[in-house]
Structures are given as C-alpha cells and as structure tokens.
Length: 483
Image (cartoon, rainbow, N blue to C red; front, side, top):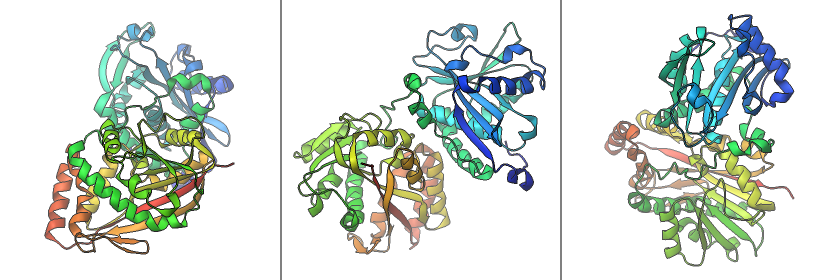
C-alpha cells in the first residue's frame, strides 16, 4: 500500500486533524462525504448514504482546515443481530465488528490519510472493544479492494451473498491472523502519523466521555501477553533473577524520589513471584509502608503468598483492579507496561485507585535503547515488531499519562551491560555491569516464541562465539496525581 506523496502535498497538510466524533453532531457532514464519493463519484445509489447502525457506531473523521475530507466507521452487531442471517455470518459469542463506509475526497486520496484512518479504527477497536471477529462487505467497484484488506488488515474471503442492491463479497478477520496484523499496524500508525504530522486521537478518551458506549469496552481480563506463551516453571528462576536485577537499578533512584512519608500504602502491579516487592520493602523509605501486590497469574500469586506471608497478595488485572477508589499513596509497576495492549485503559484504572497527590512509579526496559552487534539488534528489533505489547512504551508513556492528568515529575535511565564479572553485579552511578552469561540470560525468554527461534539461534551463536558488548536501558518515570 505504498503511495508516492510529494513534499508540497505534505506541507499543505499542516492543518490536518483526525477526530472521533459524535454521529449526531456530524451526520450531515458524513452524509455529504458519502454522497460526494459513493453516489456522485462512483455511481452507487442513495442506499449507501445511511445505515441504521450509524447512530450506535464509531466514527473517525479527518479534517483539513476544519473541513471534513475523509471518514470511516465501525458498526457493532450482537449475536442475535439480523446481519448474521442477512450475510450468512458464522455465529459469535460476543460482538462482531463491521468496518464500513470508508470515504476520502478525491483531492486527498494519494496522501495515505485513508490508509491511516483504516489502521487507526482497526487498531483502536482491536485494543479497546470486546469482539469475536471483524468483517467487511464489499460491493461493486469496491470488490477489487479485497486483496488490500487481506494483506493490510488480516481479512480472508468468506463468501459472496446476494442482496437487493447487488452482490456483497464478505471478508472476515479473526484469531491469530489479526494478532499478527495488529503488530504491524502499530508500527504503520506511528510511521504514517509522523509522515503526515498528525496526532492520532485517543479512542479510550472518546469512550470515557461517552457512557452510552461503555458496553463496547473490552476488560482484557485474560490478557497476560508475557506469560501466555511461556512456561511458568521455566520462567520462575529467570523472573526471580530479573527482580533482583531491577531492584539493583532502583536502589539509588528511590533515594531521589519524593515518596509520601509512612504510614502509607503501596501497590505493586504485576508483582510476579513477589521477590521484587520483598526487596523493595527493605528500603528505609518504605520500612513502615503497608504493601500490596497484584498479579494476573494465579501461579505467581500462590508462590508470593507462600514465600512472603506479611504482604497482601491478590490475583487481578490492571484494567479492573479489586480495590476501592483512592486506595494507595504509591502505585509501582516494573516490566508491566511493555506487556499491555491498552496502556491508556491501565492508566485510567491506576488513576482511579491512586490517592490525590499520589505517586505512580513505572520501571520498564526500552528496546529502542539496545546497543550491540547487528545480528543481536535484529533479534531485539524483530521481537519488538512481533510482540503484542509495546516494548518502547517508555517513549510514549508521558504523553499517555498526561491524558489522565498524571504529570511526569522525574525520569531516570540506568544502562545495563555485560562488562562485569560473572556472578557479581557492579553499579557505577547509573550504570550496572553484569557478567556475560547473566546478561544474556535476560534475553532467553525470546527463544520461547516459535516465531523468534531462528532469530534467537543466530544471535545466540554470535554472542557465545564472540566477546561482543551489549547494553540496554532500564528506564524509570515518576508521575503525580493532582490534589
């Protein structure tokens, strides 16, 4: 879907804006766009102008100089909806999502605006809406677009049905194929948005402001991107070692953070086996804190309860935590946000359970900071591409947190490398030196993904045959909730 765009055309797009809109406020403009493109431009009859689902659908519009130039929408159907019979669709346990009525005025068709809008609504629904599968129906001249939807959006041909207005080619997207396309869509949205100098609008914020759409939200209650493909038994030793490593990076940083004085309550989200929180509790600033740990994995929580009995451990999910509003003075997460498909929804829930003037303290690795031989860089970069979470989330977290009134107060970065002695951890300011084998063990989880085996084997072979240096940053960001 690569298109040639001139520098002059891009310069004219400085006043381009994308918005999620209320249909009732923009119905006339949306109908006008559809009429200009579908009826006057492509020869369709007036039946394409309106849908009974317009009022309950999601609508994304593009504006240039505050005038609408493109639109796309998503419609939702419950399992008992008539559309199942009309289009002979497979049964579903949850909502199904139809992407429809994608229009762009002719003057703007070569600028990748339509492509970006298609990716944004697809990606937004994938991240935020509970669904069984996606589908589209193509009629007339639009049927020639089927290969584009197959390559770029993960749809596959289902069948063709007759309708009073002509044959409809139905394509469906579901399962692992959507997951693979989602990983590509994330990168494409970033690239095209930067290319067009436009800020992607937040679907999460739009849904927050529209309570009538609350039923569409996915609670992601089973999301555990990190452990799902991995063996708990195999990962436990590495997680414990990682916890000690992360703690080493934070010892000096905690001294510099303005934490509330005790008595205070601290929640560690994604606490894993509890090793990290146990180490954290020994810091003088946290000595009299009341500590709680939350993790989605029942195995992790059981291990933590057995090993560290004085802490309150709960099983739960960051999108819907089992705590009342304003429960904690400090909320801490380490190596959590990189594993979330919807960090905005997590930030909203964190804001809810954080007390006014409370602290959100986030620690995560940033794959964009990795430095090392090309063959190992390729492995890290490829893993970032195929991983369902956001392994460069620390680049984006301040802007996302700002949406939910969480202000960035402090940020730190510790560079971890393999230039230390084996079996020892040596710290020099904001540098942490590990032994070569210890450092490489931190990347072993990559090999457990089938789609990463060949990349890991090449990197592993190079690493073990050479004395190459590798390094990566563990970054920390501290946010505050207003009073």
